[in-house]
Image (cartoon, rainbow, N blue to C red; front, side, top):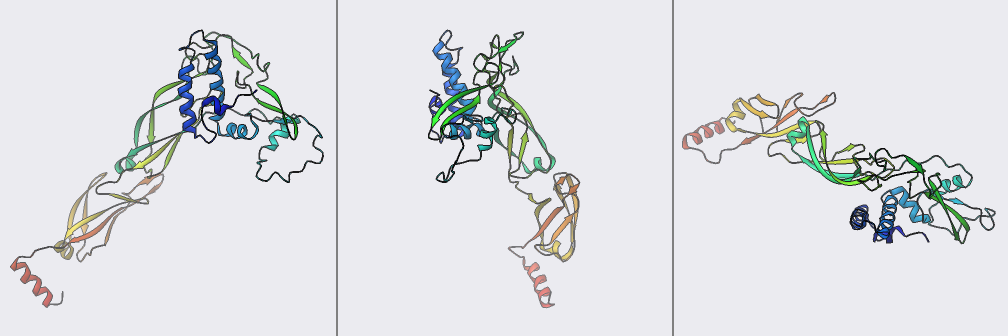
Length: 354
């Protein structure tokens, strides 16, 4: 009887990818051959755990497993009554999206082998607004399943040759016959021993015990480009979870840009509030403003009001050939107290209608 992959890992059918991964790591650590030398039961259990994880960690394989009880394509064996008079009514809610694969396997179409792929990963990093303006390189350390650095994922000890897989006879696929109300089904799935390769090492890699992957903590450099926005994601191909006999998934970096005490981003523009005195607003002045790219001397024209915007072209965010502007939004600081002399001047201006 085929194993129940969810029961093997001790998780519910509704378990998330993180829960499946956590359960696998805990059990793999417990039953790893290195911790149970000479224990054939533990070795068999380790293989079952690995087979279950390879299926449930792949969204596509997991979907097919949930539907048909096996990962990979399935095919009808032409059970009782064959296909004559097949009526899809009464199967409301049944997902027929993979039926093309089923008939393809039955008639020998196959469609070519699909490349096994590890799970994608996502991590978040925080950068400052200044770093998003210029771009920055960050290093992160993540714990993940990586290709074994001794055998490079081949699962073979150095110098060891490959031999035909005895489980599948070198085809890379295994077939199981299951009975159902529709007749007999040939359930064709990827071989759990050779992972579809058709061959296995004569001598397993000692470091990974023939699994091809290891749990490792890796340091990864993240080149964050200039102009990146809050909430953007970067994709690093092949830096995700590795998988035996297949390609590694991708690593996605979710960017959070921290708020700056002075500057704000508005599209491609970089803006801030510039507070000036009432007299400077009336008479005009020059002020020195510290920006991300150095000091700028800014002319404030006479008669300026709160809310007026002074623009410096080309000093905003630069993305490709497009450059934003530097925007200074004026705010007039009104004096809270006036000396008697200042009050007399203001009263004279008021009398003149200014």
